[in-house]
Image (cartoon, helix red, strand yellow):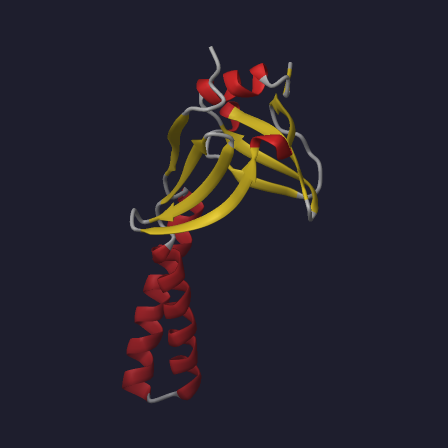
Length: 156
């Protein structure tokens, strides 16, 4: 059975870590406190601090929920990042011919891209592009592993 010409997609969902949640809440409260003090005392540095903490709070809130969507369509592989369920941005794209090999586990090569949430489910994929060799860490679905095994790109 040739799976190479099939189409499927899978998702990798992640939640906000405790560290990011702590930073977001701390930035929120710092923004509120510095803002109130700046209004009462009319002290310019507190206004600047309030704006800086407000910007930090805004960016941490915007990236609160992150998901990765993996699409395989007849030899083309694409990874998109979805933040807060509505903003989608294409992060990586390659063809099946550009994938040199894939193996289970984390490979600590230097030019890497990370698209995973569970470290126990990670596969490291070596991709030869026109820009050079890239190492991409992803969570994969069994059908994708079967395709790469049929193409003799899976290392065990």
